[in-house]
Image (cartoon, rainbow, N blue to C red; front, side):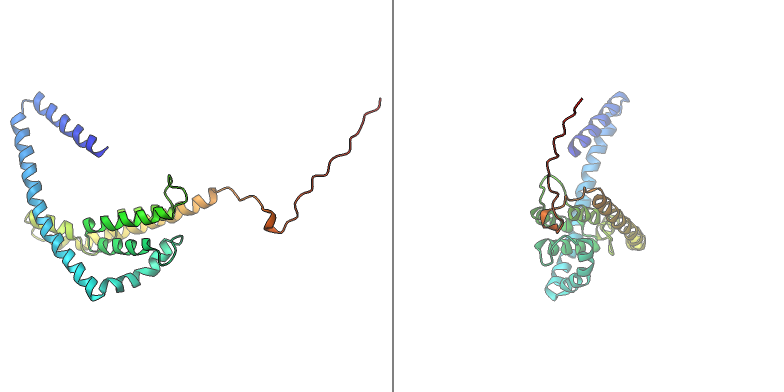
Length: 221
């Protein structure tokens, strides 16, 4: 789907350039965009390698375990249907920790692994569970303390204050995360209300209704 959208945009741009007689400008823009993409990618690689190294040092020093202990009660509240000690909890904590540092590329593999573990708990493999929806909402909103990727992009474009977005990013992602949690709780309750009540079973203690045949009555004229 995404590939089709990008291909459509390229074709539309090419057609407009051909109609307006601006093929040269279109070609120059294509090569300039490719050059900028490579330049930005190299800048991002250096920043990502740095922060991934910091995370590895934090992991070896036990800092991530302390963060996991702090986030543990929050994760238990957000994912009540995931058993404690399940491997999905560890991947969810790693995903949240990476998102806190603004390392979306590092958080993605952990999010995928968490989804795979949650799928193992899913009784209906064709339908997402509430826990999977919660993880998707949190990963999309992802409160961010240090937007490392955005800072790297601003550095590549010679921003006068690359870290000037830290405060606004923290506020925006905090509001987005609260909104995601509120929406998730609302739809969880709505789903529970829409579920049909279970039929009473014989073990519920209520005596079953006896089927007594009705007496045959004959009408006499």
